[in-house]
Every structure is written in structure tokens, then in C-alpha cells.
Image 1 (cartoon, rainbow, N blue to C red):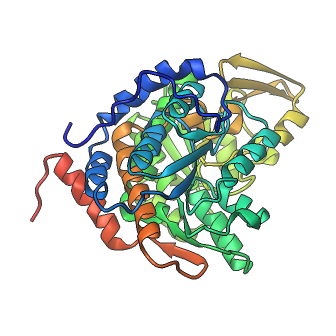
Image 2 (cartoon, one colour):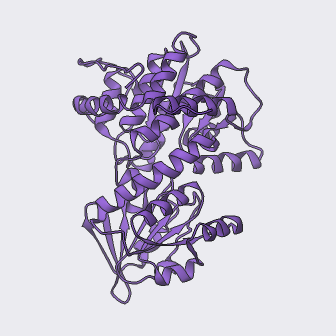
Image 3 (tube, one colour):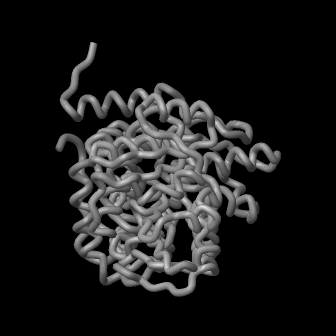
Length: 413
């Protein structure tokens, strides 16, 4: 692959500023990071572009993201550019302990472990904020909301770069309430991000996870996609390619019409619940799949969530209503509801492609993390803006997509 590739250390650097599960797992984490490092040519090219200008040198960067091999490589790129990097997981169930160990060994200040409780995750965020970062790479707006709760840590903060649809929704809610204290750049809204990551990345990785978890076929099944944004569109496209009969549920009339014109059947949630066999939420909103819908489903229905946060399916209500529950397969939970109807919940309702799978392919995340790196570079090198939610400049978006075309050997007029 063209471009610079970071070669990881073989010995342990004893850095006291980390809190992880087990440092001895570092060698396995390092092996995973080295695999993806050779498959992220755009990120490597941006490293070469930025390494001479010194923008990152001496800065403090806080990262809250799904901590696995691809995101770890981004952290190492930022560190190699001269920044002090502090990292935590945006979802405790997607955190890979071996990757955290490899990062700690490389001198990244990591505060994360797989399966952290809500209270533990809160402490990890506080530890992260103690660095008093200058820029933040956020995934779901966890750092953003935390720094608003603890503003004493935000004195040096120049800006926030947000990765996800859910995070952008949270940022806009804080802004609408008149409480946003910092400028935030919506990497998620960049054309190349929602086109590649949200559509192709989530589309493929969601089905990779579901088929692995369930060991069931997709072809011939009635698959219900709840939400037809870029994520839902990607999941629907792959499902149709695998032979599924795809049904879409939407509350946005434009998106509902788009789904219809794309050839999918569009129904209300109530009607879809009665006919569907496999249900996937993809909205970024709370409680879109509720007990009232689940009680209409046929026995054997499988439900999962592709949204960032584990709030789209009302899991507490399912647990309360269930007569019995067990783990039917690894990370597949069976709930027996009145009438002996069995409902199967994937990955406990958490983001299925990561909590129940390996996340996006490396080539997809190459573009998303290149946008993130360029966004942080932009925030560090430009005068601080007023608090608000801003789109990523188009020239940065174009830079990344042109580098991707070059990496693919594609020339355009």
C-alpha cells in the first residue's frame, strides 16, 4: 500500500497515565493494528501531508470512539504527528481490551475496558477530560456532553469534531437549548462520510454481524428497516442484494417516498411488526421499537439495533414483560413473552455491527478517519469560532475523496 505505515513498538512503555484491563494483551492488539494500518492509504497520505507543518505538535487531543484496531491506528497517527492523545471508548461493549493495551504500550493515555458499567464509563470520561484537551474527536457526543457538565475542563477547548448521526442530533439539541459552549464540526455530514461510512460501511458490517451472530439466512426473509437515512439505506441495499424482502418504516415523508421509489415496501411500524421476521433500527432516536410493536411480532422474530446508542429498542420494557430469558447463542438473547412467543435480541440492543461484530471494513474507515484527522487539523490551525454546529468545509471533504480515488487507481476528468 502507498504511503507511510506506522510500525509499532515491541517493548512495553510503562506509562502510569492509563487505566485498562490487561497490558499483557498488547501483542495481540498490535497485530490487529498492523493489519489495518496497511489498508488505510488515505489516512497514511494525510499523515505525510500534515507531518511537516507542526499543527498537531504539542497539542492535547481527546478521543472518544469505538476502541478497536482501526480507531487505534487513527490515535497512533495523531500521536505520531506530535499530539498527546487521551482516549476512551464511546461504547463499552465495542471496546477491545487487547487494542487498548497496544495503545497504552505506545504511550496513548487510555481509560477504557470492555463491558464498563455506566458509572465506570463516567469515570473514564472524567479521566479523559482531566487532560484539558484543545480539540476533541467525539463519537456520539459523549465528551461534548461531559465537558458541558464539567466546564472546568473546557478552558482550552478550541472545538469538537463529531463522527455520528446520533452525536450531531445531540449537538443540535444542546445548541437549540442555547447551551452549546464550543464550536463543533459535523464530520458525519460530510458527503464522503455519510456516503461511504454510513451507507457502505454500516450496510456491509451490520449484515456481517447479524449473519455471524444468528447463523441464519437473509435471502427470502421479510426484513424491516426502521429509518431510511444513510444508514438505513445502506442496510436495505445489502439486504436486497442478499435476497431479502425489504420493508421500510419512516416518519419523514420525503424519506418514506424515497424508499418507495427505491423499490421497497413502506409500512407503519404496527403493520410491519405483524409481518416482519428480522427488524433493524437505524434512526439515532429513542424507543422507536417499543413493547407495543414487539407484542405484535411473530414468534422467532429477530431484532437488532444499528444506531450508535442502545436506546432505539426499548430493552428494559422487553425484560420486564418477558416470562423468561436466556442467552440462546453467544450475544443472542431469547425472551419468552406471554403466549409462548420467542423474541431474539442481538447484542443486547447495542450497536450490532460493533458490539456483535468487527465494525466497518478498514477501507471504509480509512475515509472517515481521514476526515476526522483533517477536521482536527482544521480546528487546531484556524482561529476559534463562536459556539455553534458547523459543517466540515467542502474543500476538506473533496481532499479526502480525491485521495481515495488516487488510492483506488481511478482518474477522472
